[in-house]
Image (cartoon, rainbow, N blue to C red):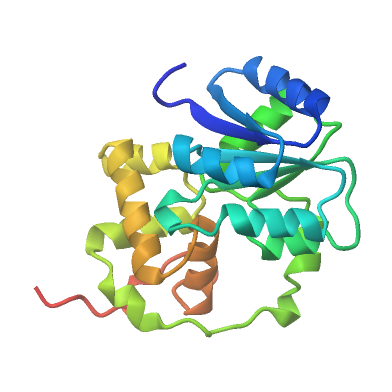
Length: 233
């Protein structure tokens, strides 16, 4: 596996499910299944020991139990939390709970191996992989809090971090940001982690939500740097 491969931990209480998921992922390029767990306690230990980029959680349906496990997996410093991709047999009425718990993706088990691998790569890059109906149900527009974040935190960002945040909001991957700004992908990852820390958010998705909530995103022009006061040099 290359240095750029996505490191994956599988969590499932069913041996056959773990075998199937492992076989599907290992058949795809750029995926490295580094460990498997049959219970949440073991998964937490393996997350600490192996630092996976993605935890694939296998469940019958993405309900409250899956949400509790997701919360446990993400109860770590933002820079150390893996992305959580939930693979389920079906979607039930309590599925929005996993979104609120911080899950980055939800995929049904009838997906093809290439779709599963694509979802793993997507959540590893900071994208949310969710059925649109589930996102609307979990976060209905009329109930989304607006302007509840502190805009002053944006003034702690450096000019380079502002440029990176602009591209994160636009949906660019780390590789695309690195290409646009002529910097290394590792440097982009470092900038993103600094942004998350300064804004006090867990992941890229919440950084984008933050940018919208404080008015940093306006209409079709994704970023309005004019709302920021430059830090004193």
